[in-house]
Every structure is written in structure tokens, then in C-alpha cells.
Length: 254
Ligand SMILES: Nc1ccn([C@@H]2O[C@H](COP(=O)(O)OP(=O)(O)OP(=O)(O)O)[C@@H](O)[C@H]2O)c(=O)n1
Ligand SMILES: C[C@](O)(CO)[C@H](O)COP(=O)(O)O
Image 1 (tube, rainbow, N blue to C red):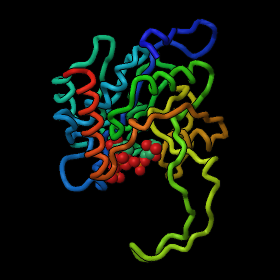
Image 2 (image 1 turned 135 degrees about the horizontal axis):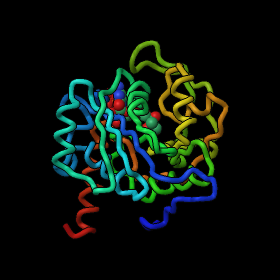
Image 3 (image 1 turned 90 degrees about the vertical axis):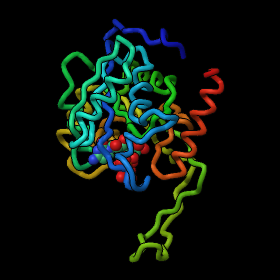
């Protein structure tokens, strides 16, 4: 998809500039000891900077709200000052909360008026291609209130009774039909009012924003995800991300 393929519709569909909220306040416990995950480097550049650039790569995105570790807003601001974005993209930095949900909520609270479409993108998915970002935006512009990039599963999935002790045996309860399951990624795209309503209404613990919209009874749809939009969660993911970046740099000739 080219950068110019995202019109600002004038036919009543949500158009205009898009804002992206990037929750980046997690510690990265599963990645192991070190700096907060979003500040760890990939190819010498902090993961957060990759994620911010990935959103700003879409010409539709005019504002990125970064939700920083509460004690790290000054560090994140100076980091972003040192890695400027295209002129069309503004950046705000706000402190995050205890959970991802709370951090996204704080990012939404900071949104100025004028962005009808909001993306929520994990800092921990630094390598999402711009075509995936644009596909999500386009689906919201086409009238969906909530859109998730999704991939089929490669593994068979079992539903289990969780072990009583870590590493203990887990009785298998069921094997869901894999053909109807999807692994969902970010950015997830939303009609702004719907997302804000979901965050004001849903208090259950959830692991993504689209499930909050589902709880409102609103429809959520998928667009094709991308393998390179994987989440850097465990140490092996960092090795994979370095390899993907190295291949991209080789292909781009720098
Ligand atoms: N209180 C939190 C927790 C998570 N996140 C963000 O939510 C995204 C997805 O979360 P995850 O990959 O689980 O990150 P962590 O919470 O840092 O990882 P872990 O659970 O291993 O500590 C990350 O970009 C993370 O920075 C956040 O903004 N605020
Ligand atoms: C939002 C998400 O990336 C979609 O797959 C995922 O649910 C985040 O989960 P995490 O355990 O907070 O990383």
C-alpha cells in the first residue's frame, strides 16, 4: 500500500488525522533483568523509537501519544527529542499506570480534540510494517468501530486446568478448533468515541483494547496481521527482532 493511498474521506466515514497511543510503561519482566523493555535497544535504537517511527510511517498519523514508565517521562522525552519524526507528526509523552489497560487509559485522557480514529500500539511490537498500520486505519475509515490485525495459529491450542504448582501437570480440558482461532496483534484501530466509552465502562482485567469493545457488544473485525509485528516478550524474541532488522537494513542498503 502506498503512503498516498489513504484519502481523507468526505462521505461521512471517519476521516481526518489519526492519533496513535503507544503504551510503553511496562517493565518487561518476561524479557529478564535490565532497563524497562521499551528502552532496550534493537539495532542500537530503543525499541520505543522503532515503535513510534512505525506509527509515524503512516501519512495518516499526525499525533503519537507515548505512555512512558511513570518515573521515566523525562528520559523518554529526551530520547524522542534525539530521534525526530517527520514534521507532520506531533508527539506527547504522559506517565503510565500499573497495568497496560491503565496506561492506555492515561494515553486516551491526553488526546486533544480532532482525532476521530485512534490506534493503540504496543511499544513491544517495534517492527510492524506500515502496510499493516494503513490496513487497520483503512478498515476503521470504511466503517468498522474496532479493528485488530490477526494471524492464524501455527500451534494446536489446548484449554487446561492451570497447574497447582509452577511446572506441574495441567489436565487438558479441551482442544478448540484451531481454524477459528486467531493471534491478534497491534496496532488495534478504533473509532475514538467507542474506545473511550469502552475504557470508561469496562473494569474487568483484559489483555487488549478490542476485548473491551467486545464487552460493550460492539463488533470487532480483523485485518491480516504480519509475522514481523510480533511482540518482543521473551529473550528469544529480541534475537529474532535483531535478525529481522538486520535483514531490512541489508535490503535497504544501509
Ligand atoms: N503497566 C503497563 C504494562 C504494560 N505496558 C505496555 O503494554 C505493552 C504490552 O505489554 P507487555 O508486552 O506485556 O509488556 P510488559 O508489561 O513490559 O511485559 P511483562 O509482562 O513481561 O513485564 C508494552 O508495550 C508495555 O510497555 C504499559 O504501558 N503499562
Ligand atoms: C495487546 C496484545 O499485544 C495483543 O496481542 C497483547 O494482548 C498484550 O499482552 P501482554 O501480555 O500485555 O503483552
